[in-house]
Image 1 (cartoon, helix red, strand yellow):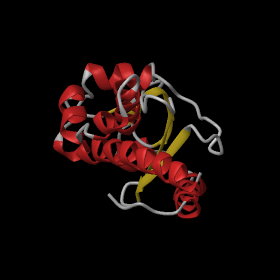
Image 2 (cartoon, one colour; image 1 turned 180 degrees about the horizontal axis):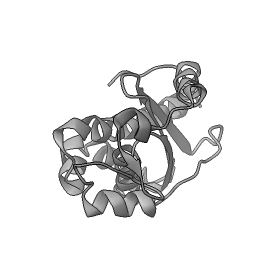
Image 3 (cartoon, one colour; image 1 turned 120 degrees about the vertical axis):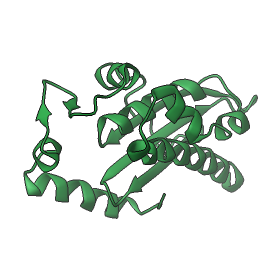
Image 4 (cartoon, one colour; image 1 turned 30 degrees about the horizontal axis):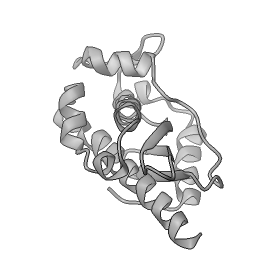
Length: 168
């Protein structure tokens, strides 16, 4: 995955909005009151995390106990921001949240990742692999980049937290 600056990510999101074209019409699919359904249906775990995402939100990025990972996939337009709140004495992730602009699989991958890292030490959280997330959600090969983004976002959030600590 490519890590790009927030300005570029914003440009990608605005380009999608400016086109005024939904993913459903681009892909020749039908929107059904939420998740877009195509000939290849989403697995029930993806649908559950899409319809009931866990840990949506954001923390104050200036909080010294917060690490922020912002990653994107320019090819498909998915953008993921994952934040962790860390207990400074134990190094354990005590809370996590995310905001994702993308398809159902990207949102589900973010939701799963934010759930899995809560309560874990940072090194353990950073060792979560995209293949674990993809397997859990039964993602098809064409959607593996979504789980890769989630893995990259976790690592970026941990890295950001550690960089803040070094500067302090």
